[in-house]
Image: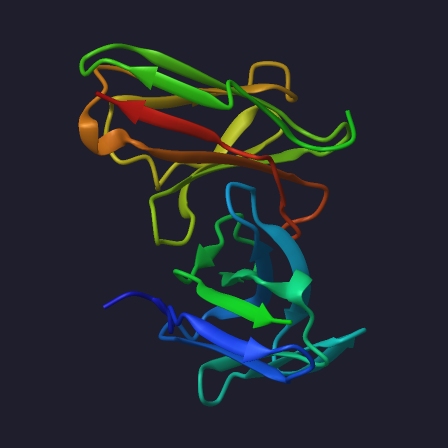
Amino acid sequence: QKEVEQDPGPLSVPEGAIVSLNCTYSNSAFQYFMWYRQYSRKGPELLMYTYSSGNKEDGRFTAQVDKSSKYISLFIRDSQPSDSATYLCAMRRTNAGKSTFGDGTTLTVKP
Amino acid sequence: GAGVSQTPSNKVTEKGKYVELRCDPISGHTALYWYRQSLGQGPEFLIYFQGTGAADDSGLPNDRFFAVRPEGSVSTLKIQRTERGDSAVYLCASSLIQGSLFFGQGTRLTVV
């Protein structure tokens, strides 16, 4: 079983919808949680970076971490066709360079 | 340059050959990372440099893989005796602080 599990989708929503993306993990030592967006044939791009439990908001994006449940979420409000991409969650331990990634969820936002 | 630069963008090689993949990180970033991404999967950690030294090489799959960063900036990932299973996109990232990775476009390696 992988340390980080992510539903691969694909997920298809109409423009303007609220999107919820999720990951679960098994390693309780993870303290830092990231969400990356990856367009086809491009490298991942960092969207959100949070430490420990709680919420963080940045524009249309909200990241939530629930360490007690080992569950993290990314919400996208007012989704746009330009949000169509693969979303990767990632996490790491304190003082560790290595990040462990999920396999990504592919999102399509239809106009 | 403004971002992480990887060369070549594509590399096709024959089974058994040696390849070198180059990464030029963002200027001033002390940390450099190599990941490998297969189709439909997330990036898989290979190695992490802090300055010139490999701080964590636990992800290198076997002794055919080696990476260097002699002057603390440019890094080269070297693969000996390539196998078809090595075919993947090799991603390089750099960061000023741990965790906030800035990725390059990747090198797509195909072993035929």
